[in-house]
Length: 127
Length: 127
Image (cartoon, rainbow over all chains, first blue to last red; front, top):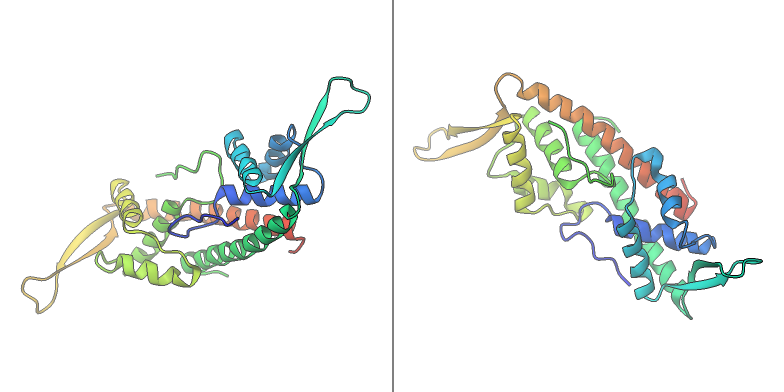
């Protein structure tokens, strides 16, 4: 799985950014279908970033499509008809793919960091 | 002039980023039509970012449209038929508008910086 970057190579794409968070949340065993939207919105509220429903589900869908994650349905204890949907790494190499993706994204985030620092320096004369 | 942000408020838009550079280049009296594309590409080459022709001219056009910049044609010394096209702040308040825009973009770049730092911290456990 590799990320299609903006053809001109500007900053990291929103989709890639969200996928990175979803992989980390899976590592932390806290990627639940129902709460995903709220958790991510809550996370970025202080930054004025409000990921929309379709962007989030496209990111999740990409990860499933690419064999990184799989959906699991689990019955809620004590509740007859309620199910909880969560995500875990898929099959034998889902986790390997996820780790590789994270390494790519680390490089990409570092690149963005430097580019923004450069813009602050170039346009405002400060470090 | 205010920047239309990505409706979800993700990172700074490429257009805004380029406009910021063009304003600063005008302050430095080095915004020339002919060399603009090359100068910007050269600037970002180490970051793998290669702004395309149409993106650059849309940004320039926005600044003219918004009354920030105006085009000046100057005859090249000693050259009968050659003209140089460059840009300067327009009319009475082009420079004021430019300064206001720069202040907005400083806030926006700081926001992006913090958001990327957060992503590095959240996903890679480092500061």
